[in-house]
Length: 221
Image 1 (spheres, rainbow, N blue to C red):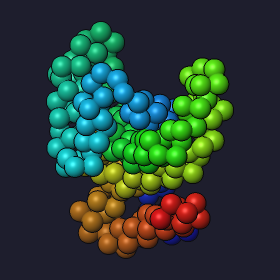
Image 2: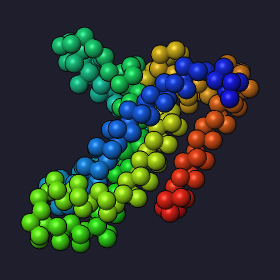
Image 3: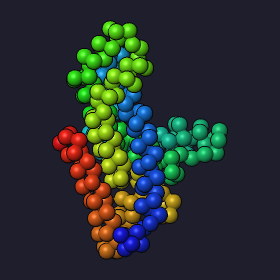
């Protein structure tokens, strides 16, 4: 373990920080969007398509479009920089946004499917008994789809550890600042340091196997 940490300890700590923040974001946005997309509302197809986009669209292309949108001279990033002097890209929030977008569909889809299935009747029964939306969400829905929530969070966080394409565009791959574990592997290969690249890849592999074992335990695979 010491040999792995010696390769790029800052990148490992940064990846853990990003994973911690996106876990909290997934917990709120994943459950909220999964619940919302299981119910009819205007423009549901558009929202569903945007959430699912990272599953079918190349990550590097998504990152490029986000860079055009959120960069210092972008449609959103330009006015934001002019008003506050703050840049989203090439910063820690940029890394969090990249990991969040990449992993969001893996969190939302299992929850959405579970709610549309067995939990749908429980929700209708709760409404029939006079429970409000918040009470139904907290007391009925979340306990009913608890396994799918945990499985989705596991997949989403796992995806955040391995994300490269969007992260490269929004994070900038600045060593010591925005270099995540995946980018450290990429940089080690570019530098010809295959020993560190191998050690870091084994660490990511161990994380993936741990997440897979957790999913098997939950009975989701």
